[in-house]
Image 1: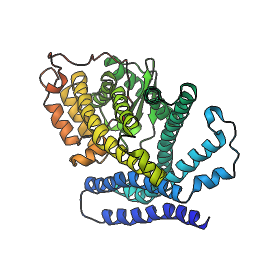
Image 2 (image 1 turned 120 degrees about the horizontal axis):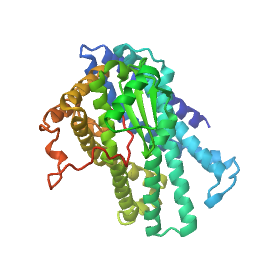
Image 3 (image 1 turned 90 degrees about the horizontal axis):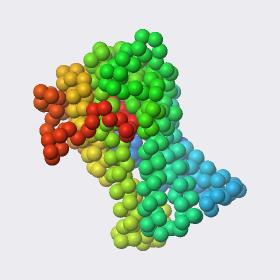
Image 4 (image 1 turned 135 degrees about the vertical axis):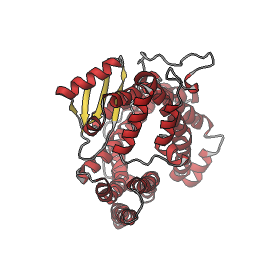
Length: 414
C-alpha cells in the first residue's frame, strides 16, 4: 500500500514541479510570446503521451486494479463482464491517468496565463483535462462492452472480431461529436450575436440545430467547433473571443472551414483509417508474435507494442490524414467565403491565439494541423474560382458538393 501511495504522490507532484520549473525558465527568455508558448506546447505534446503510459505501467506493476477488484463483488455479469469490477477498472485506470495530466496542466498554466494575460482560473483548465478524459473513457467503455456483447453472441472468430470492430468504430465516431457537445461548457448564443451567426450560416446554406457559446473571453481562446453526424442534429460552438475578434467575412470563413470538414466527410475518413490500421493489428497479431510477447511478459508484452502502434497511427497516419484535411477545409472555405476572407481569418486566429506561424513537421503531425503560414500560402494559391489543384479529381471536377452536409466531423477551427 505504501508503494501505491508513493507512486500516486509522485504522479501528482512530479509533473507539476517539473513543468512549473520548465515553464518559469521558458518565461524568463527574451523570445517572442508565440515562441515561448510553442516551446511549452511541444513539451506538453510529448508528456501528454508519455505520462499516461507511465501511469498505466505503474498501475500494472503495483497490481492496483487486482487489489481493488479482489475486495469488491463482481456484480451483475452480462456478457461475462462483472459490472462492478469493470466500473472499478475503468474508474481506477482513468482516475490514475488523470493525475499526471492535471498535474502537468496546473504546472504550466500560470506561465501561460501570464504570457497571454488571461483571467481564467486553474479550475477551468482542470475541467478541460477531465472533460477530454471523460470523452475518451465513454468511447472506450462503449467499445469494450460492444465487443464483449458480440463475442458472447457470435463467438470470437477473426471475421466476427473484425466485423464487430468495424461496427464499433463507426458507432464511436458517430457518437463522438455528441460526447464533445455533452462535455463542453456552453450556453445558447442569443440576441444580436445569434442573428449574426444565423445569417452567416444561412449564407453558407448551412442551418445547424442549435448555436452555442463556449466560454472563451477569460482564456482568450478564439475557436470554433461543429459537432454532429445526424442531419438536423448538428451544432455550432463558438467562443466569445472569436466573435469579438472577427469581422463578418472572417467569421464566415471560419464557419465555412468547419462546414468543409462536413462536406468532405472527414470524420468518416478518419474512421475508415482507424478500422484499417487496428483491423490489421487484430488480423496480424499472431503473425507478428504479439501472443508470444504477452505470454512471456504479460500485460506489458501487449501494452507496449500496442502503444507503439498507436503512436505511429496517431502521429504519422492520422496526423498525415488530418494535415491534408485541414488544407481541404481551407480550400472549401476559400471557395465559399472568398480567398482574402479565409486568409485574413487564419491571420486573426494566429494573432488572437498567440500562435506561432511556423512549426516543424513532427509537431504539425502530432497536433493534426499544418502551420498557419503554410495554410495561408495554400489559400492564397487558389485560382480565380477559389480552387487549388488538390481540389480537383482526375476528371477536373470538384470532389465535394458545397451544399452537401450528409456527413459530419467535429473539429476545432484554428
